[in-house]
Length: 279
Image (cartoon, rainbow, N blue to C red; front, top):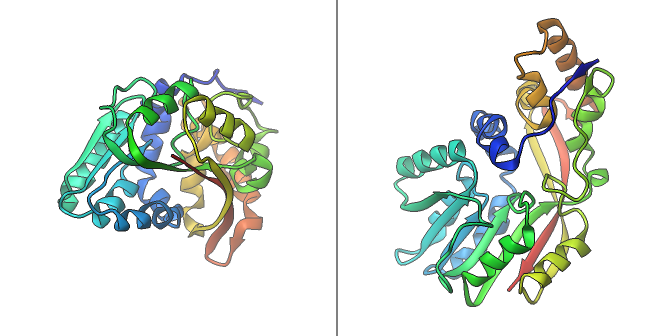
């Protein structure tokens, strides 16, 4: 069995292996999670002059969709802790001819202009704050009267077997760091009462947390790329200290474990999430 190092900090992770992996997998991930984009972006069309902030904007897919729906007086901004992903987002916006303001920052530390935002949205970007109460207090202070928050976060890992398949399959071959209980990470917002407490503690009102299930798809031949790049197993597969034979063995074992999700030429799974709204 191969050992892996202790997990890095969120800033180091998203400006290192995780950020690099998401850049490499940008097209794959945009397709995989495309169904969430209209959920967050379509309501913007009713407020074409709004100033919208995407928290944890990554490589910019949601910001680009929002910018398409805004009128000439509207404004879209994105903030993310990952410099590599923001670099890609800026390039994509230039290529699309969209004036989107991207900032490399931790939203918990970033100083936003008071009462400057009409809407705050996030697709899988709010679960990684070291101090979520501080982060959401910062964001709440930037919201205008009548403004709103709409974020999407993962539900419990037990409801998302696709997202834990790689780790379970790798367990006999690889000693991975345990997911931090209660700390920042993919499933940090799995408990809706915890989310409600965070939002109430940071000054939000009108909190609504409802289940959102989304069917996600990718081509079956993209599965090895997905496994090789993403999550703790992807990080281990990219590690320089992993022997080539061990890497091959691990990759095959993990890819094979996804067989229940392979339907012909496609991988299909349900993303079990929370739709989180507040004002």
